[in-house]
Image (cartoon, one colour):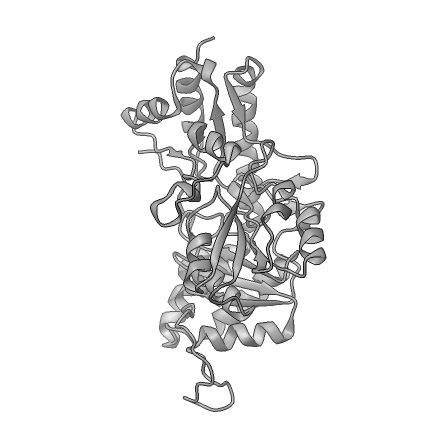
Length: 366
């Protein structure tokens, strides 16, 4: 089976893990945790990092630290992984959905203001599949309406908006280091912020709400959202390779675009976009199947399954899922979800790319 994504681990990761094991510090204390926080935040151009047990925990932690509570509303894109809506719901708040931009698939800034009410407290832009959101437009709306901005950068390590890496545009940014991400710690996540007061709140809430100056004294209700030293040991090694991994991801995207360019010219498919103001990491290279292609997106996925090649459909729009069902119209997100397919994007791909391209070309109505 050719996987859609897979971790790339080597001697450096193993060396760090062995060092952590030999030190005896294998849980939530140890030198690698601080080192990972410092190096990743510095990479993203942000002052502080707070490592967490996973990306969803990072989102929940950020929302709680910013005071999001029962009765509040938080604006999120409807085309996203469900974690963003779940994290809002954990706080007792309500996720308010926004449609996608037809050109680059992320949250459409022009659709945000109509969703703002007196209950709205924050916006969570999601940098979908490695492509940044239009952060200037979103930040302007947030400032005009006194709203927090929480970047969901789980899929976009190393992506850039107007020459600046994502993760430093909002009040907090949240990353995931799950096994299929650009860099991984197996599970794991991180909150980034430039706010010194906020980072202290994040650290206290991450550790059961324990007072850092008074052991086992808990002034607030917190969570067990700590990253282990073993996970961070892997992360420290992975950061050194992040730029290399992004370069390979972009090379894979270039091969896909060159190999499938003719199909796009004939309006049979639409390839993964990259706006002029963005540097996309193509975490998972994606495309849209047009009606003229000859078979549907789901039929194409089944064809790949028979060839033992893993692909994925786009996320279901969140407003169509049972917990978040809305009788509302989000036409762009619904269309993207119906036609979108994620192709294998592992940095280990080599000659398999030619096989994937050949299958798509042979199935297209040329």
